[in-house]
Image 1 (cartoon, rainbow, N blue to C red):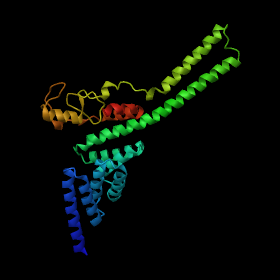
Image 2: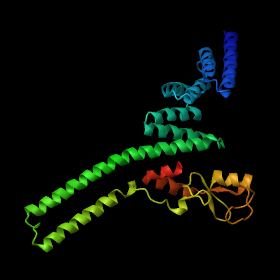
Image 3: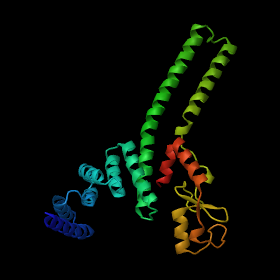
Image 4: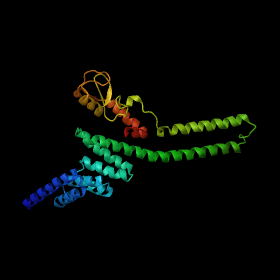
Length: 280
């Protein structure tokens, strides 16, 4: 039995390798067939399911992406690619909250492994998109409810003054009181919708190179904070010096700016529209 199992595992691995070769050549149908054979031989290997899910992802077959990624995660919940693919399927279904949770899991798995995988940037982009679309949907609902409430309050205020006899044409004093209350009511509702109103992000929350809101801020010995990925790219391609101060700088000197990172997270929590800027 053990020998037979080893043989099936070897055959499954050969099918996976063949599937990878087909995938690289964009022969998605052939790759799917290979991964399907591998799954038939060894259904408990999670990577076979994620590989096939990735083929479905390329084909935008979101139902099968969801099915295969869920099977993969049932076998191994620590597969960042499985969470990314499932999140993508949820995003297409406009289940933004579920998509956000899956993308965050994928991002956390990569970060906990101290990975420099290029997928970090891609996952951040789709996470920002999911967060923004979720805000946009709920913001529209909130604005509509607030406008309806504002109109109801204005009508009630007008009715109150009319019934009390204070809203008459020849009474400047009562008329002034009414319009002052209408103005105050408008100010109250304007403040209530302030969090849903896009504005400029504070400069201290933005990188001095990209002018975009921070994701992974690091501080240099000279006291300047940058986006980690952008600064590392500068150090590797341009030279070992601080872009602003021009002081000598090496990668090992960078320190995470946790205070700024917490400030960004707090800001995004209160102003989710800013995720659109992060997705630029």
